[in-house]
Length: 317
Image (cartoon, rainbow, N blue to C red):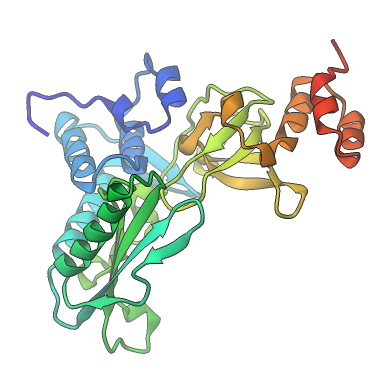
């Protein structure tokens, strides 16, 4: 990022609804850093440039960041994250004692379309395979969303699992490298809780109880759920999370369930025409949360499979 270019942190909020909601919000530097690392539409290089910009722009600034019960400082976490990413990027081209596996997967099925078990002697060969396979989708005008991963696998590792060294490089549907992970000798002193990727802050959301939301993340099938409205700031900073609970419907099992780990930055408001027909029972649950239907009526209509009739009835108009 050039010195004369300011960081537009809104660009790093992948959800258009959350981005629009926060268009006038001033985020603190540590909050901006968390938003940067959580973006799945920006490349690792773009995210590194943004983090370096924050460190340079606020040289005397520091503040605590929390996640899962621990607390660390903004500068320490940002520096550790940059060190880890740079080391993993450099390790891609250190081939001695390693092989590479490349996989292209269809996101909504988690099906490994091409590459499972294929091994390559170097990173570039593995990446060339991914480019070729992705191009086949484009040539066929197939808009199926994919993601890809290159795994750097250590040969003849020691039996001690703590000594195992590896790298993982994740690409989004546009074949942009957006996430890296792994373990290297030079990163031994950086613990899991010393990285920005595990830090959180409380983020106001534009959704209200009863809203049906769509959830899209890098490696998981798209899913839908009803926002419960139970989203408020935890008075204990160490336990603030950037995940929430949604009420969901599982069509294959014909039952309602809930999630407790939905990443809030992957949520957008689901338009009525977007909701798949097989997810229609969520409309009933939505009406319970908005007060348009009581739970007994919902269970009655659902049990009788009278979905269409139920959606035409509002019990408390």
